[in-house]
Length: 306
Image (cartoon, rainbow, N blue to C red; front, side, top):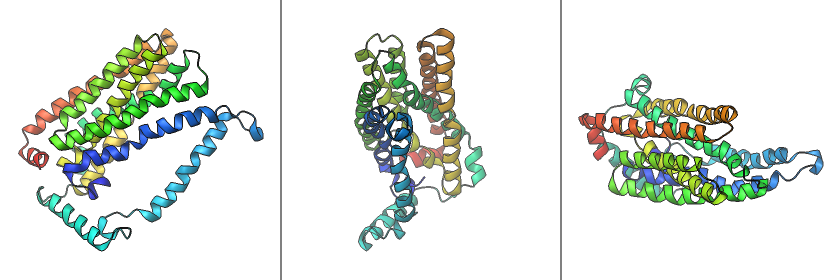
């Protein structure tokens, strides 16, 4: 929602990718650091995991204060931009909004829109994949008998490729003006990676599989988050985006939980990984259905073309 106030729709996927690249980038940088911190047992009487929690909380505390005082809601209030920059950006955003229908959707319109519920389901699958990576990928790598530090180093590699992949994919989405197949393709790639991981018998094979999953999950986010503001505006956009986040993030509970439950029952990660892959296939399917439905809506079609 915030980025929609600062960047025109034609550039939003690429900008969202630059913003959301922080997630895989934090894994690339933080995973080896976390692995090293976990080895700090006994220093000042604290366990390694306690040191990790304390040290990795500091940046969030610092930047939380910075955001509060530094960022502004709208370009017009940004004192860290020059007058000319503020004027140009405000005009650019006005021109971007001029081509859209002159309506402001209510909060209830955003909550009740069937397209919001559909995107919530799409995001549900991608969230299941994302949290599967965060929670279970290190455990899958560690099952090959590696130390915490080695796991941290290896787990960082797929995230590096994910940063590059998502930015390039988002730029291509903006350049082509296409969103649907960019979401579908990314979800299918992530699903294929999860399926590949079920049969991996070496660290290298697991690394390749996790790289595919990382790229797919990360690349799906920018074009996906460019969709809600194509058909919602005003309070409805805020409510719609919040709804997609709220419902979709439940996938972050369901996916990893099912992997744990299935692993306890079968002794293998395979069944759980197939389950999450199936959720991503559902995300891809729902995206296609939503696109076909929206194509019959003249208002949505006009907004998408703009």
